[in-house]
Image 1: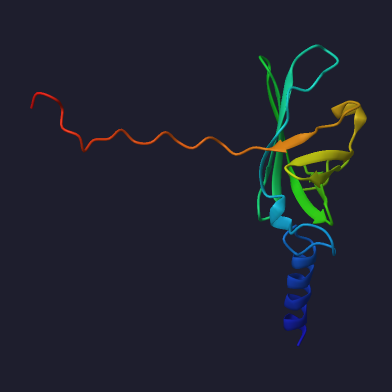
Image 2 (image 1 turned 30 degrees about the vertical axis):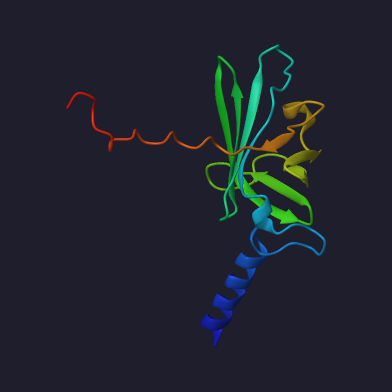
Length: 150
């Protein structure tokens, strides 16, 4: 039936196109890439300090943000996929079309090491990242203790 085959084709394409569809033999599971990544301070040609953050979501959406300290932050949304030990970010525009050269990193332990990137935008060293785990929220104040003197 035509409708059924179309649905199967679309579902198959969706699975093949996602970062969660598996990885090549010898590579980490795609979930090894999900989460938050952050750079150390990165050099710029203008002397401004910049810090990159890379949010990798399980649904294959991702956002690379570049904070130019004291000046503002630039956000680059996109989609990611994993192949072996590499993750690729394809930046997209508002219409979800590819908008820039993809960035590729290799997973080495808790670090993403740049493999391919636009050197005009990201410099000679690219955007090296390390896994970032946000600090836990402080514990709530202990309200079970009675105030002294009461």
